[in-house]
Length: 230
Image (cartoon, rainbow, N blue to C red; front, side, top):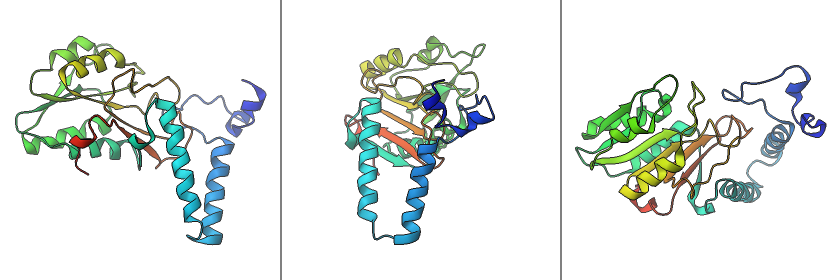
């Protein structure tokens, strides 16, 4: 590792840390930014709130560039579950529709869809095979009543990486909403919402984005924004 980069991560003084897929150790710039914010609140209360909003908007711009989105398509949430729940609860569902995902998904990408059963929406789960999710298994569950296909960018238990581009193309051709839990890959792997035809994704910042817990990203494409109720 480059020495200048290593200096940003005090954890390297004691460990070879390889568990970013759980929680990333905070680098110095993150801690310094959080400390500055806490100091401002301590010394000024809300007097400098306009500066905080400016910082939020700069962050929105950075996130948009990271994923090839427009700033107005980016919102900030508490966590991945919060973001995915906004999508699941914001759509206007009709009885008999269905959602397709994988049986090995992290609960954040299962429970929001599962509760839609109260509206007569079916949740269809593709099996995991030796740590992999075969695209054919997912696509075989899709029919004319499929409203959403929801998958993780990278699976939390196995590290299996989904072929988002192929899935996104499939969904776009059929006008199915393509929703991604991006937390396990965003920041470590390229993620392009246009190339992958992603309609919405959510990701907390405490893994590869090297941020604190409780600061998450929600992306909703302008193509589908009018389908959501706040």
